[in-house]
Length: 453
Ligand code: PHE
Image 1 (tube, rainbow, N blue to C red):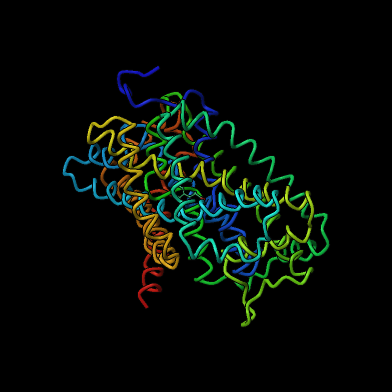
Image 2 (tube, rainbow, N blue to C red; image 1 turned 45 degrees about the vertical axis):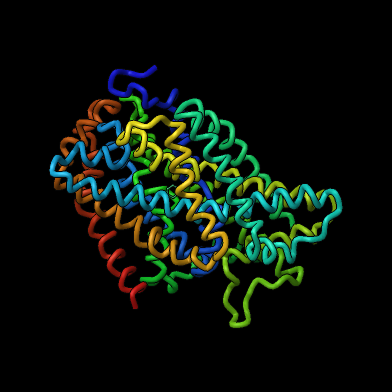
């Protein structure tokens, strides 16, 4: 049902379809792995508070900005900024987004491949294979890593190939409710295990003296990553939105779902860590600090599941890695859709060819990373920690000074009659012009200084 404006590009079939797709993009490894381990690393509930502030006061306004730019221009990030700024200068923001998409996806795939490897291992251990304790080391030090990276990419490309409503929307509509159900059931189950109460206490009891500039940096970076902001994923998803959808309301819903899922994931992972500790499994290193997040998720938890033992332990373990893998898949789709939409729109190439070409490029980097997973930290520093806030900052500045907030508000109006006079939209306009750029700017400069030092 393409209109003349959107011919060939596709649109979301329903309002809910878009919300689930965007929530699918947002909910991913960032929520189920990143957020709980960041909370645990940064002293519990004090982090949660700062994180919530970052999501609501900075993330949500930036999300509204990205969706509005996308729907107005009906283009990928490069095309969108080009259309709004004839000087061509703005297109740099779009190119930066496409680059971040490719690079973030290349390591995201490797980690997503791990989830697949565990699912696979669990199924085959059904047939009597050995345990999981050594599995992570074996996996990440050999060619298996590359194989699972490639397989995960094939799933991702397969869905992207199906297009916007037939591929992305259809897949996320099935996967998202399933994911939520699994998460809630698993968190509920972990609560029944001995030692979990200590985890819940550590998770929810705040120690505000722990709030620091470092904690704030981590929280903002986590908010950008988790809400899929700063690289044009939501410009791209916004470009498939129908004119009558209320952007402010949709963005708010997506943000709330993303936060909610992270909060529940915290209630699963952190108590599970303390259940493991209770059973004598190491969760702290020799210096007393928490083990790395990868170790916690890919060796501590599997050991815990093994201790549960029997068919039930296997079932729990399988469910957990399936959950992580599915969440990763709906996010990987959106990371790939950004460069694919760019190639389709700007180079007039069919979706099928575009997904194969871009998929090949991403895989090239993915395979390199799979042979040296130490590279993941470098990619995270450049493309997540610097790349996303930088993209978000440029988006705020562009919208305010080049496109102008008045034009953005007219676009919002089409699905939100009376937007111009709404207090909500006025607040948004103030935030996107002043509050967000100043706050992101401060955090961004501090992050860069920290990394350089
Ligand atoms: N939001 C995803 C996650 O939490 C990752 C992501 C980042 C997806 C940027 C798209 C764009 O895992």
